[in-house]
Length: 191
Image (tube, rainbow, N blue to C red):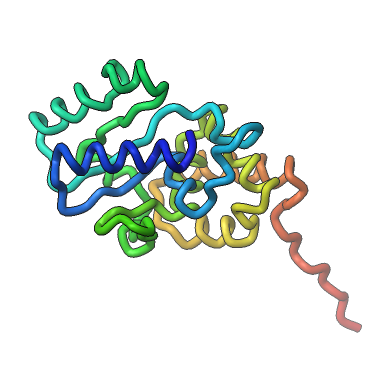
């Protein structure tokens, strides 16, 4: 997905729902700060959807927007990309404090993108192959800095299962990208 595609979906959803706020949650949340990621040969080139959280949202409005720009819409058939309209319960799956780290989308009042490190943490917890592939690419492209990702993982409250899954995936990715966890300094024996 390219930034212009994301903007078109944002504008369509806003025109239909007139929300107080729109938050881009998924991988397309990277595009406002890193539009190059949607270009040919880049990690988001083959992403065709944008996860949008509109506030307020009810089931009727979600259905209307889904019919207009959702996966089965004529819009999707014509343009090749679409919006997934998320329900407010998705916020329960996001890292604690995520709302305080949102980034405004330039030129669009009350439109925000999820912070890249919050997105990365969600991807580490979910741990699907496509999520880990994206994170590997973001680490290699230096969109995500290993030390900052480590710090975010360590400072964000997670449930036990989520922490174990995220920690395992983070250790694997950092090892693959040559950014392993720092080693404890060697202890010098005292005389």
